[in-house]
Amino acid sequence: MSRSLKKGPYIDQRLQRKVEALDPADKTVIKTWARAATITPEMVGKTIAVHNGKVHVPVLITENMVGHKLGEFAPTRKFKGHGGKLAKGEK
Image 1 (tube, rainbow, N blue to C red):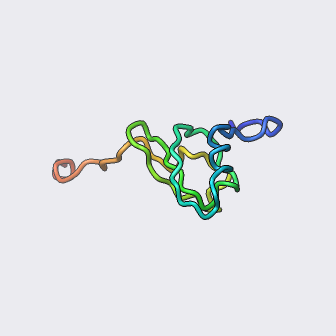
Image 2 (image 1 turned 30 degrees about the vertical axis):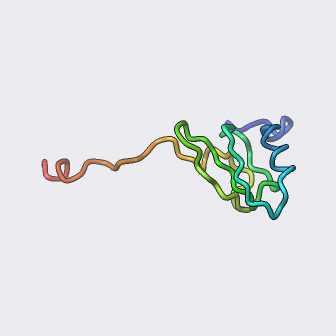
């Protein structure tokens, strides 16, 4: 279920202040743990390091990402694949 329209999108206030204070030409990476924060148009062109539970994953924000959550672009699990030689050989 999506968030109610009357509530508006969730945007972490500390992250929003850091993005607004950053100069447009500045390429500083902003670290954040706010994976649930919605990407806004002000963030386009900035690099935000999103925590995945272990490290901060740098994410360059593009126009296509507006409206999505930051956590969508920092996977928390490493997919190793299904089966392999051993699983394919057994039949």
